[in-house]
Image (cartoon, rainbow, N blue to C red; front, side, top):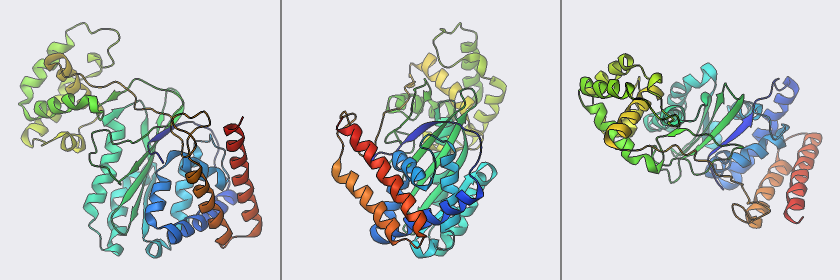
Length: 364
């Protein structure tokens, strides 16, 4: 499986109450069986995979390309599992809009029942949000953030941002397994329909930019601001993605005064510092490139990714074992779930429909 994020067109409307109620019951039944049969880690692996997540939404009754699947599926899971979280050894925090900003408080409360230290999980929640809103500046504003945790401290994050200019949404998936660095290639894969040209400060190629940015943040603000004003007087190339006109030295100076008085040890500490946002990081990246020759990456970390491979062998051939395992998990979940027969049959029909389409494409 691959983890990353997906670009989705924004559609109007909302899930009707009768559908959301059924989604809550069916999602609860499926996840309850997945956890009981395969463990909480399997749940995190599945929820952090953008293609499985989208397929899960389809099984629950959403169109594959509906952006509403993100908020509604997460909402249905949070509602459906709230009274059995302790039993399953998992918990869900966060949501859309104002609810997303309450995620740290929810994590703190919910980790008490598992005797977990909330600080590392709160940090993971904040860092994943900060990376996708400031470390990777791709034009999408984060408005939905949901944190999935387990009783042994593992976690996953599903969050979504919206691009107000294009009307598209981009969904970001995070998984704690094997994540060693929040600011160096933290995404394992990305699924989307088009690429942009973002300022990617969490790319491997931006390592020099990160290093110089930290040094600039540790210096006296007057020196850095002097360099910034000097750069703003230059005529920048038309193709340059960072524009001096977008940067206000006066505002940046206040932030740099804060970083100078309490200097960050590394880029992660700089990124999560209160007040350090996209404009501050753009300014530091601009100075790092023009003055010190540390060029940042402008590559969108997009690669097409499929849970079971592609029919034409790209990015890799269909993994039939993994494919059959996914179907088996869902079929067993639905067969054993305590739900009405009509909902069982409808869910199975959707699974068979998607399976038939995939295999038909595979052998065309």
